[in-house]
Image (cartoon, rainbow, N blue to C red; front, side, top):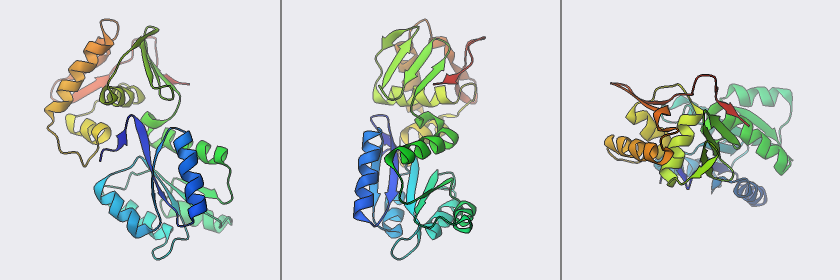
Length: 241
């Protein structure tokens, strides 16, 4: 399984309360995310062995291994140390919040919470840790990418992109000016559990340039011996609405 399907960010939900789990699942689906729901830390570890999600919502008080123990373990492993994590818990004391954050969580949500608060926290963490999955409009030079409407435009005109081309462009637009190797792009766009050749990136870069057309194809630059980057036109700094 790839990190995301049809351009949607995957969110691993680790929650044993079925009512809360369903609320989380429904809220995430309505927000345009792809939830992967499990009941225990052990089940979460099984899922993580096969796919690396874009964010994890982990309940503190799980049966068996606690969510805090799971978070600490994920932070200690190379493959998951950068996974954005939000801890969910009914424990709202300051000492508990500090313990959760010091344990490796990026944010902390106290139960009960509203769907609106949940989405705001998810968006905030993704904006900091994985900006390519933040909802809204990314703009670089003549390029505009609406991550909610799933639309790409060049100089105001809509262009057609395949799901892979959309994810690739979104990642590059969220990180303009930064050079990424083929392997880094494979890990970030296709997923680290997808075993395909590095040259696959070259093919999709060529297709993306064709789709962008003369007005924007030059923005996707090849950096000899290093990889690819997206360059903003002078005087048109990247922005996010």
